Amino acid sequence: MENTTNSCYAYNGIQVAGGALNSVKKPCGTARHNDSPSYIFPNPLKPLCKSLRQKEITGRPDTVSSISTNTMAPNQSPEILSTSASDSTIDSAPGIVSELQNLSIVEKRSPEQEDDYEVHEDEFVTPDDIEASNNPDDSINTDKSDSLEEQELEAAFGYHVDLATQEIQHERRPIYTRALLECVKRWADQIRGEFSLSLEQRSLHHIDADGLNKNPYRVWNWNGDLDADFLRVEYLSRAEMHPDFQSRYGEHSDQIEALRRYNKDHSQDCIDAPYTFITFERYFSNEHRNQAKMAEYWKAIMHTKDLWIASSARRQLQETFLEIAKTCAPITQVVCFGLGALNLNKMFYNSAIQYMAVFSIIQTLNEYYRKTHPDRPLIKLVLQDPNYEQRDYEILQKLFNNISFVSDPDGLLAINANTLVVMAFLPVQVPLVQIIADLFSENPAQGPAAILCDIMEVDVEKWEYSFSDRASLATARHLMNHYEKKGDEFGYHGLEEDFMEDLYGEDWRERKRLYWLNYMDLWVRKIGTNQERPS
Image (cartoon, rainbow, N blue to C red):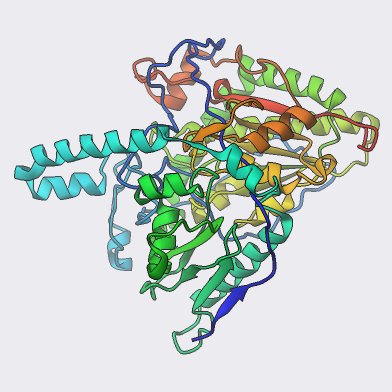
């Protein structure tokens, strides 16, 4: 067995983690208030299952196959394109499906069965539901067990650790450097390449990497999953790497549990490796083969597009970004993380409006820049989400031509000084903002021009952080020193009632659904003397 030790990088230290998601309750589609919140879906802090990442909100894990980029003609409008589409039936993906996800099919089906299968969009089935239906006498005990597990999860999410002291111990050096992410990419590409090989042809059996304290740990092996055909890159947040969190609540983190499986001799240690790889066999959707189903998707999305074009929210968004363009570094690409797979179930249809908004942002910026530079290349759109299916590739490429799909960590490595980064409703366990702050800590002028992300607490005086914190002390320093938060940019944006019903269903009021941008903040990089001025 080959011993592959990751010597491509070394980190001598750690930066602090943390930053809590603000407790915000907002009237539907309007202003924010700092009242204590009632539960508002989607709530990225709400524990969903035994493992913190085992069942996530649809469209939120971490890797995807790359698709070739379609280029757009110079005279072609970047606005949502109306063409026709074609589609299929659905399979599910064990290991990454959400407790909230619509699991109409939970097994692979033969080709003969596929043509006759009808997907029931209103079904709301989870693996736990299936098990409970087979064992009705266990339902009471299951409910009690679930309640205890949820209490334990809430305790895990809320447990605070002193990351500031840990940061000082490691001399405030960044963890997620470009060198580290490039090594992650090399390993990820190599693992994916092994999927298509027979067992006899595979040469990569495991990967070792140094932790923060230079101790080597195994970050991946086949671990018996010889039929695996899908890879997730999992990054640990600062809280997860803290020894106190690992000793108390490590069992609730999929990343820590994976590292413990890979390092059985160190299962009681604090394994401070910043990343790990999880491989498994994924069942992919066949909906793209079903023309009737794809036509249903297209009809729904075109109706949503019409509502969006006529909405005040679109006009508000265009006005906001016209003003931003006047003071922001020029944007040449938009890189999006976790916008989500398309789903006609109203529980998850919110991703459609997120794409519409991104398309309109790009259209607005293109029109602004081309007034003074008619030959300026159109802004590129880069999408990364592990939940994408072939259906999503086909539909999204018909909606917007200048688009590419990438795998983790290619989205992170694509970010540069002329990038608008968009991330929506990522689970708090995905430390994306912490990674971006690390990635550009030594050269902040090369960091993204702007970041549109979930609301988070940014406090340079805060020293203790919990697993539910998105930011960190290092993240707070980076944002406060080099970025400006554009006030309450989206607090007063909203959608008309018929539009809210189209997106979320007739019961959107009862479920307290809000327009997605009401949950977002916009950070714009400050323009310094060594930075490019806006065009």
